[in-house]
Image 1 (tube, one colour):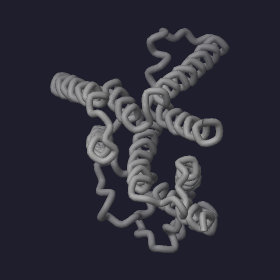
Image 2 (image 1 turned 90 degrees about the vertical axis):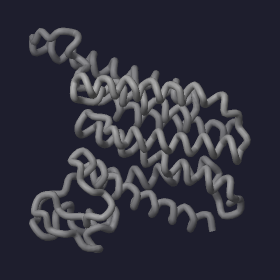
Image 3 (image 1 turned 120 degrees about the horizontal axis):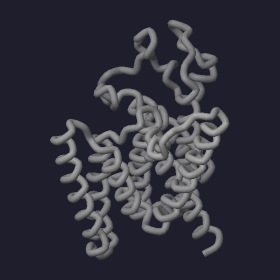
Image 4 (image 1 turned 180 degrees about the horizontal axis):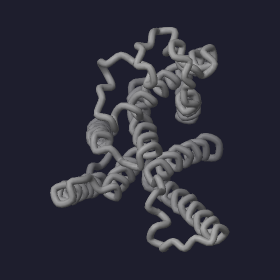
Length: 271
């Protein structure tokens, strides 16, 4: 029975992955993500059910649009697969099974799904546009507040631990509003900080510390490779320019999921 449950979770994960690709593409363009039917971005032809089956449609259509034959970006296929397996792995590590389903575990699983939506979409948009969308940040904040209420009311956790994070949310939002009014744009740094705060609330301080360390290592490697490449090409670039195009939100998102999986696996198999 557990095998059937995990197959269902895998399918659900790929469906969410398909939604992630849509959201990543449309949100930066301020397009509707709930009511407007899916369409080919090249020929604008409305896609039908057989064109929208996660993973399988890409394979059967050989990675091309059925109508204009334009190649479909592999990211759709990759994100659907990664999302599906991420859902399964985390469900397994959370000990979700047919025999122990209960309201608390289902609630925790539901919040985890909503949190993964935040991480995947935030990281995906940042990967494509180097931007932390304000709407996604607000989604993360509202989701965090709902999760804190759940933890304090249902699981009887102390709210005092979370007050400091809520205060930081308010401070960063105020700073971002001031920056928006002064420079007519949202601050990328503020968006990254808001994402980190959301990560702390859902995955805990230990996971986020490791997430930041991993992100710092990846950034350091990218900067080093960039510098070596410039030296090889004999290009002189100011040090301050090295990191201006690095997608910190994307790296944070990937690092957070990997560290979350590692910690859940550690507690499942060694604690």
